[in-house]
Image (cartoon, rainbow over all chains, first blue to last red; front, side):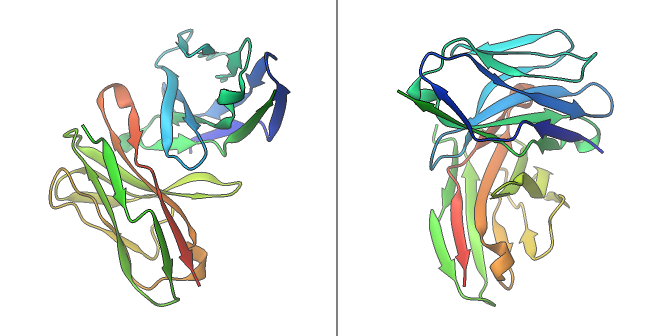
Length: 112
Length: 111
C-alpha cells in the first residue's frame, strides 16, 4: 500500500534559519504530492503541491520538488519566521478511489 | 463561502453514549471524508464519500457510521463511545486539482 514517511520532530530553529523537513513516499502509479500545514488549534490547510515528477511546488517562501528517482518531496524554506511555527504534513494521492495518505506530521518551532 | 464547517468544537461523552459530529461544506464538492488525528499517528481516514448516497470505509471505520443524503452534509455517528475514540476529528472536502479543504476540527473526550 501507499505510505509517507516524515522526519521525526519536533524541529526547533532560530528565526531566519534554513528549514528542511524530509519526506519520502511509497506509492503505486504516479502520485500527486502535497504539503499541508496545521497551525495551533486549527484544521489543515494546503501549503503547496506537485502533480508530476520534477515539478516544484512553492508558496509563502516554502518550496518542495517532486523527485521520482528518490521518491522524495522535501520541504524547504530559506529563512523561517516565528509565524511559521506549526505542524507540517506530507501527503500523497494515488491509486484507486484517490484516497489521501498522510505522514505523521513534523512539528516546527521557531524561536526569536 | 464558509468552506467546511464542523460542530461541535468540543464534546465530552461518557462511555456508551452516542453522538453525531456534524460536517457541512458549501463548495459543491462531491468527495468528502472524515479523519481522526492522534498524537504520533498523523491523520487516519475513517470514512469517505464520493457523492450523495455513496459512502465507503477508510482504514479505521470500526465504531463509526456515516451517511450522505446531500452533497453538502456528511455527518459522522459514534454509536457507543469508547475511551479509544478520544481524538480530534476533522472533516474534509476535496476540490479541483485534488486539494483538500479541512474543517476546524472537533475535540472529543470520552470518559
